[in-house]
Image (tube, one colour):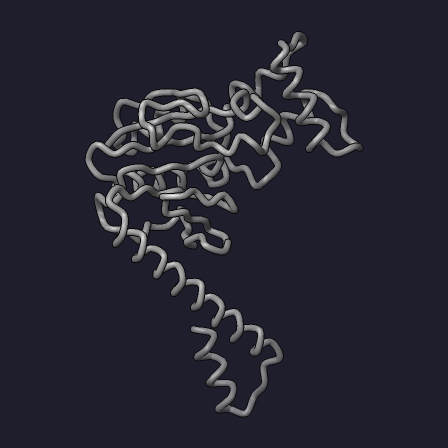
Length: 240
């Protein structure tokens, strides 16, 4: 039963509900957010010739893109990417998701990629960036290379708790268990998911690189020491 309807019934019966003011305020806030998101969506699509969808933006608002996130951030359209997208077929030229797909379970991620394919125009391109399982598991070796040493040291110092050993085992556990991660991809598995969703010509790129100007240098690499996000990540692009 709708909470507002339930509250009205309780009021008619002369009953009280101690949390009702909070429920009503939450409902009003949700309605405000939904209306704001709808205005953002409508205005962007009405005024943009080559629409670009940014999924899971968080605080990173990209100019010229329709920035979306499941959480509420000012100036960001609220959208749960695990549900059907609120867009018509063949709406977007470009779609971008950076370190987002690993936060949802594999079946929901597969559904999200199918939705991305549905709302993309023919010839449009999707770029997906996510942690690379091969790089993470590669830390579990007796002899680390310079990039591995630098990444492991930073990850342990920054994210491994003090009461855990600062070694590869702890770092790998952090990657799998922290930040709400649900599924960590390798290139083959992510490529297979994109293929299954209908994308073709799937190619791998270094961060910052793309054959399409709109998809170059858009990663939020500043949040990591120089080069480390590129070491950790895999970036694949596919065309509809």
